[in-house]
Length: 331
Image (cartoon, rainbow, N blue to C red; front, side, top):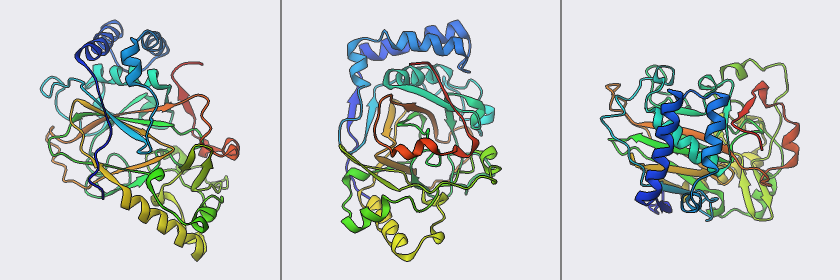
């Protein structure tokens, strides 16, 4: 794993104050971060009136790293309360940061949520949960969370993934690797741009597990665009044993290259990691959860960027395992 640092965009005190004031006002008006059409409409209006300086920080990812860290938000460790032991019990914990993250997400594109995940909320709480330690989901802790494309199984997945840090006393790292930093042989690229295997829905989508009557669509792992390569990658939910040896070999070399260029990003509570989900796979190193209110706690938002041409047109015909994405506001 590389020791290279993630690119940083530093918020100045004025832009931090602008964002926090907007989030405070919205929370005071609605009394909750549980998303509703009214709250989402107000978020879109407020984000549309951001200053040029704040909007500049929300510009697209602009390096081959495929990510950046937005730094300068103020998170009070005492005021946010203990780390929840489950997303289901988090409720409005850290509600003003939910709204701040949603405002930033709206400035970057169209926030999305999923009917089948975390009750359709547009901002998720990512915390270790008892009984889920070894799963390949955000609720795990004791195992390596394998590098993956967020919601890789779905054609409507986010273009951008945002991870806002609420607490990380143990400096637990998020891993990230950009396809644009890898070196692959032409023969491997040729194999991996073919639709050979499906990507199955992960364990966080219980309803999708029941979508067994529909044949899972085969999808390419790589896609060549005019701007460079993009990827769709989730080895933990890809039935590699169903492919021939040549394809498995190419996939393994892709995995090795992603591991070679991977960086570790240990977020602090004033930071938001923004990942281009078409360029970068992300994961997390193992850790020992204490469940004492001091464990790592992230907020997650997913964003679509209108007009992007980073995915094969054939994706539009996929069934998405019956899962529906919800958009925060109309175009």
